Image (tube, rainbow, N blue to C red):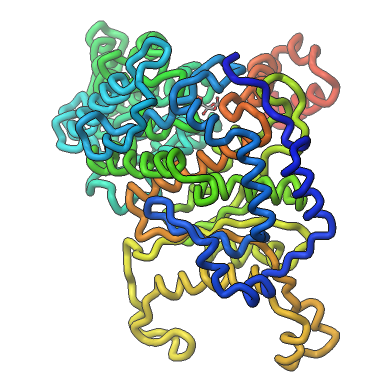
Amino acid sequence: MTESAPIDPTATDAWKQLEGIASGFTPDLRGWFADDADRAATYTFQAADLTVDLSKNLVTEQILTHLLALAEDAGVAERYQAMISGQHINVTEDRAVLHTALRRPAAGTPGADTLDPAAGFVVDGADIDAEVHGTLDKVFAFADKVRSGEWVGVTGKRIETVVNIGIGGSDLGPVMVYEALKPYVQEGLEARFVSNIDPSDIYEKTADLDPETTLFIVASKTFGTLETLTNARLARQWLWERLGASGAIPADDSPAGDEARTAAVAKHFVAVSTALDKVAAFGIDPENAFGFWDWVGGRYSVDSAIGTSVAIAIGPDGFREFLAGFHAIDEHMRTTPLERNVPVLMGLLNVWYTNFLGAQSHAVLPYAQYLHRFPAYLQQLTMESNGKRVRWDGSPVTTDTGEIFWGEPGTNGQHAFYQLIHQGTRLIPADFIAVANPAHPLKDDTGDGNAVQPGADVHALFLANFFAQTKALAFGKTADEVRAEGTAEAVVPARVFPGNRPTTSILAPALTPSVVGQLIALYEHIVFTEGTIWGIDSFDQWGVELGKQLALEIAPAVDGDAAALASQDSSTKALIARYLELRGE
Ligand code: F6P
């Protein structure tokens, strides 16, 4: 273990002070704003292109002072430095944690001068920069070949659809970023994403595809994940069957047929993995495999070769810009004092809400339809990282950890669950994310002749909701204000908005590849900050193992093996028996 024992945050003076403030805490955003004309300016920060307004959070100078002291006590800045310089802060797997190295600019390229000269960069005997940039070059060369049409399928046709097969970090990152950057996708190219072992997923995603123009990317860090390998085999089966059925390759078992099938895999399958031996065993030419390293966690890997589908879709230049966005936030995190350090401040506020004000969950509400998969992406990043009950020295945590992250794009969420955020009994801190310049600045030519004027900018209408929601959540509506609208007294309580519902507003110029990279890095470092305060290893994920192991053990029973069924507990046995009955087996 290279990590020193974590501090017990609850034993610090800062924690005790915060507990004191929290008992009987009566937030008053209306009053705080009325008393301090500078509140918005004081609590608005810039991190690269992201303008982050924290002023509508339930925070005062005094609270912030203690939260910052907590960050000092826990050594957030020092541990970040330890992480980026390659120390094995992933203690339970005895690994370095170097996702920040994936976006270090190559020497001599723009941004390289921002690198911390102290941070090396040989780690555990490996020249990290050389390995990262060697792999990126290989991914980019391949992406260029697919984009230009130089890479063709087994029948000589150019690739039109890229299907990424992966799950967890090998899926959520690529699909989220692909969706976020749709306007940057090269015309004539499409990416699809298969993740679930439910056969409906691969069936639906391939049903209308032409095998001659389809390329599969099998993305799996371990190349041992049941879902991904099963789907990869189904994809290979689909390719062979479809090519055989159309006469593109021989469909029989002759040597010529075997040879054609091998050639088809070589042209229609590539892989991304840290286990290149297993890739070869699957039949994918190691020449067509892109590596990465055990020092990248799956949920931190979209900026590695795991993003190959994105690199193909938006091109190497776009991907470089994406990486530069991450790096800009990494540099902000590394060089900005804690009191202006946006990921640190946001992480500390989450600790405040979770550990002192009893919040259980955290909403992420992008006002950008292209970010519609961002909340799902963040669920893995935050909950797989910080859903832990022991600390990195094996001792039990001393306070609650993790938050339940969830969300949907605005304005859809407004018409679904915002009621509970506005008037429910739970405290739900929420992050609102918007961009100023939309990809499609449409005008409503006719308007509705009422609230919407002819020629109205629809994006302005959209963002009016972004601004209105955080205002309503912060300041609410008092009973007197409700009465002043002429509301019948009996209905007044139902129409009161209590306010003091905390929000953070994040505003970016546009949803560029760089901004998407910035947003991801921002949340990575928020997770890091919280994990450091709680003393947990945010980079392992042992909690997903038991279910995987049991699924393999139970599989024979579900497939009808009587002895395997008999050995199950009574509930599982009865459920499987009913399943078999429903299947008529
Ligand atoms: O089951 C969890 C997990 O290990 C994630 O952490 C990871 O992103 C996912 O499975 C997929 O793993 P792999 O890339 O090795 O297939």
